[in-house]
Image (tube, rainbow, N blue to C red; front, side, top):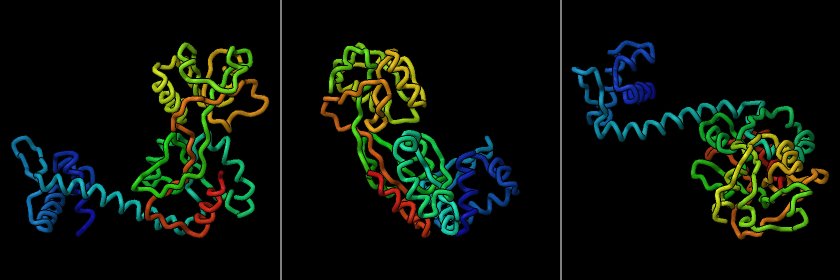
Length: 292
């Protein structure tokens, strides 16, 4: 079977028009027609019904089955091509969420430099949800991902490396500042400032608030951890942060969350099932496993 025939078929299925598919690939319409006929001969069934009156093409039930399967076939073919190229690569396409890059990854820099790897890393910094999509699509090969629950995924190899609790932070002059812990129910009337949706903190805030029976009053979001801490220090609002992001000298008070929820800041190593790392990539993976 010619994989180009599958590409032509997918174009007709998407555009519902033979001429549009031909234009997309810069080929003649008979080329598209012959490709579809070859596939129909291969599978022994009609895949596309043509409505010449309205210049439209519609998938038959057999065509709908092939469309679902062909999507996976072409995706896997693209991934295979990318991964074969990457076996000879002298760079590592690495996905790194902002907070992991700020708080955890620098601790590995010395080891990566000693192993001669640091200068070969090409980092893609984005939120964990976006990096997960790029990892599955083959745009990056290895990632550290944050999540509030462990990451089971049948398309990825994932390994939980570390987990940390979330803490509530308040200004040093806040009435709760003297406390060691707080129940989220007590925060129903508070204003919240939070990291934006590039981080998993908004999802954690939603989970804690929902369990406590209220919707949080979020007055500001930012991608800047230090800005969030500064706003809290000025008593403009309170926030939640992963515990390791709170440092001595931040001028905020850190309170453990008393609620017995399972949501924690989980750090997972992830790469695609079937990804075969070269020697340098494997060393990089081994070094990442040192995050605790």
